[in-house]
Length: 324
Image (cartoon, rainbow, N blue to C red; front, top):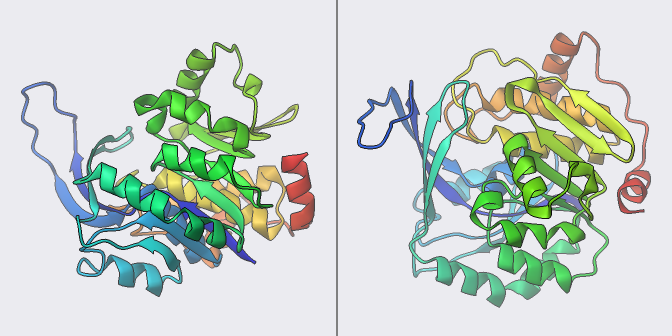
């Protein structure tokens, strides 16, 4: 079987790097502009492939998918693109990302035909089911949550389900909440975790019903992993330079999933994820500076002052832990 099938988006990112965010009616001069490949689904798929994993993507593209060079870029990385739904009706989605060093991003999305995207997803649900049977992990990121719900509630496959709702936690919070019962692993940042607690009216994020494992990113303070009665505190690995945080969350998720697939324990997987994310920050664009596994091993050793331990768990053991 292959490793990770990423559900999400394929997007052209327009990244502006600034020293400060603009206030209302204020003009701010951007220091840099970059046109790069992005979209949470594609970011995860590419990151997994760069790390040596066998990845695929299920998403709607646009009539400029080949013209922009995006299809070639994915296939050159080894990403399985059988799940990319092509159309002549509208272009790829665009995002406009205002990025400030050592800060969160401001992101604007543009879909020329959002209803058209949804229609194509539902028309191709059988393809999604067929592909899902070939992968060990299905990772759901920012995308069409109505389709995700339709797919998951009628799907009975043995794959582990990983979910990173991202900014949809604020845009469509109740769509996020109703997906949680299908999820084995939930990834969020601290702002999203706070919002979910408010919506569910719970005191602790541990009270969420559904996911066995919850990973909360804390930016420069690293992350925490909650599993059963344990809490793993993972430091942020220092990058060589701070350029652009776009896509760091996606590469973090990819690193964690690949580490699990290789048989690492949860704490080591968290450290590997932190190491992978550190590379993404070093260049503009979510897919520009993704590391290979060899690069991760080297930086892991430099930062944690020890070599990567030997993986000691089978995939069957990991699946049992996260599903029982």
